[in-house]
Length: 111
Length: 118
Image (cartoon, rainbow over all chains, first blue to last red; front, side):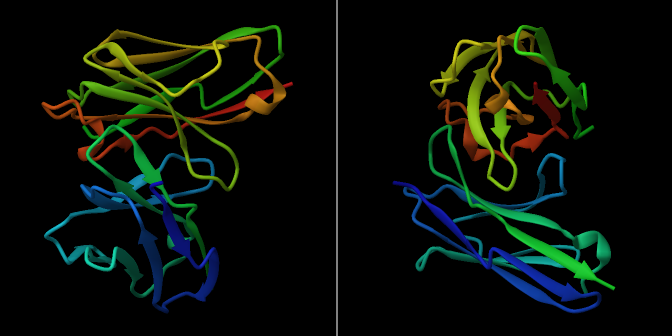
């Protein structure tokens, strides 16, 4: 069964600090991995997408890493801002129509 | 334009009502999706349309009826819903690849419709 597990479930950080979110997956065969940001009551917005051959991808203050051998990914947020408060979802796709969603990590940034 | 729009933003309906959710994109995507998302849970796929034809129905109850009038529009018709159907309904679109594996390209999500069934 294809699964995506994220940790931690939630975290609270002070504005300006960095944090790292983790994603482990068992999806096979692997096509790509995406990180989405979802504000409460809104649709997910794509932050990064990585294929098998990519190790790192950045989007502003967001940097995602991928280790396809260990089936792990991380999302690093640098110099957090209040607007970073959201749920971050790891989404993995195999070579079919269905995406496998993680349960998400809820990030709260406090002033 | 990388935007998927959904209307209405909020909808409250009774169990005997008939209503419709609408989704629109102008990115030239030929794959469109409906998802249902309960609070603090990941989205669950409901339907996939590819080239305006229903390709995937994830065993969704018949009280949900999708429709794709053209390549830019996707509707979800609702009838005789139950309170447990209350959720955020998300529409998404993407390019399908030539082999019909719809998920290999980035899916762009709309803001969702918050549905409450009384």
